[in-house]
Length: 317
Length: 217
Image (cartoon, rainbow over all chains, first blue to last red; front, side, top):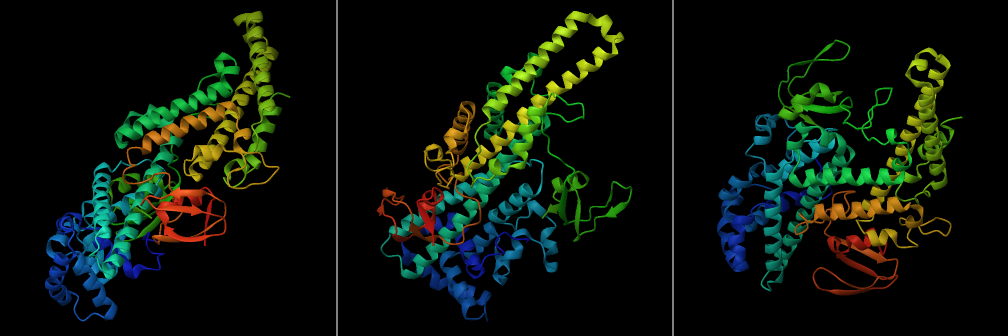
């Protein structure tokens, strides 16, 4: 459950696709000339070196390595920017979220600032976090911008290469992989944005009346919240409120039982968390203490571990 | 009794999953019930004000019976309001869900004969099930989301399905309803006739699948 790609039956192809999905900048130079020949020239140069890296692999492994080398001719620079070296051992799925590997702990410690995480992996984390919590999280504007840029660049490249008659059959196959991966990244973004939208709509009054929440939203989201609240208010007013006595037309009453008309995120819901760092002890409601040691998984109420989740020390599953 | 009608309204809406299941037709807006609840609430309101004016502040603290009846009326009125809003809110949720399910196709959603994917004779289509106010809301919501998603539109379509991650680029589809000639993203023209099968890029025909013209094989 750690990875969104886990259920996939084509895991085999994923590392390749991801790698292709990665390096728009470098590849862009090659693609601008839209010359598959210059690519393949570099391929022959690099495939030797990368075969050394992945040396001794099985048949399919060396095929993967070859694929990779065609797509990212300058592996050095590429892995520097995208940091997918770890994928070479073919266990990419678990790396997406970065759990489930004991030998992986070092890598996990730096959490979201981990330079070894590529944008897609980071997006995965952000997405899981947003979906796993009731609260609205920080809007990841920069990450989204980068992803959008990359997607756009790749779409251009794919189009150029596709219309290039010199593109070989094998490269067309790779292009399909690239496009599939692009679709998957788009799915992630879409789901992320829509999760946020549904939260915003659900809690729009709370969000508008709580200034501390405002910085978490992007400008577009904020204006959406405002306009949605207006829309809803108008709807309620026209439908029933206008025909009620005047003293009953408010939208922010609190009822006798303490229920407010303003819906707030219910922070008492339990969340399943995985501790990436030692989070110390928390006091449960019954007065008991529970230790959140590194590498353990707990099911606790959200408000008890909220700060750890925000710090990134604990991760929502 | 005060509040009986309101109770009827919310229990019906609570028990029925129709409003929240996008595959089923939305139940009709309970206009007459809502009007009578509003009327009841107004009468309650009037009687409260009348009693308060008639007796004034002084007698209110002495006359326990009056105090009691005013409290009951007041609570009943507030409860009515709460029930009405809960009903509306529930429907708003259902309407939004249907909108998303239809991929944001407002015209498709409101077109007669397609009651959220299920076409049956006795089921009312969405347009007739909505109150005019709800229709306004739906239109407003539509333009709201269109505004929001226009920021992203050059890269991705926010309203496409998020049921499950795409695993394949291409998809086999069968045409279940005549869709006529459609120009796809790449500039190809395809004449979709009932019964034909195609293998196309998912992104290009996603909308047609959502709207029920094509069916995945």
